[in-house]
Amino acid sequence: MRLKELRRARGITQQRLAIELDLNQNSISRYESGEREADYRTLIAFADFFDVSIDYLLERTDDPTFHRSL
Image (cartoon, rainbow, N blue to C red; front, side):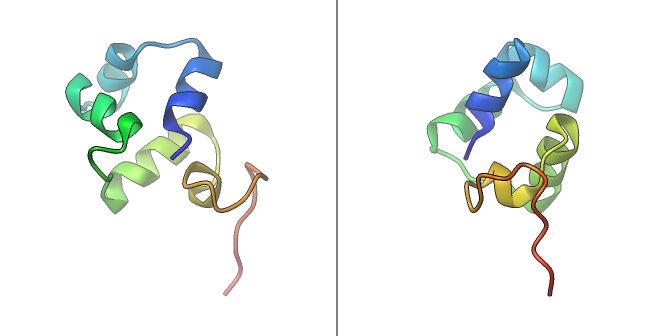
């Protein structure tokens, strides 16, 4: 997941991201390290916060605005 990369590019700490999204800082750390996988609701929150697609967040594309059509 590109969470750490996106967070650092935005210049915010794990704690700040946790506050913004009403999450726990330890959860952010675990998502970034791959110890824990985010559920759908959390993935949507991350994608919305960073204004990227979920596919980009999950490294399925290098295009941050890519939306797979059905």
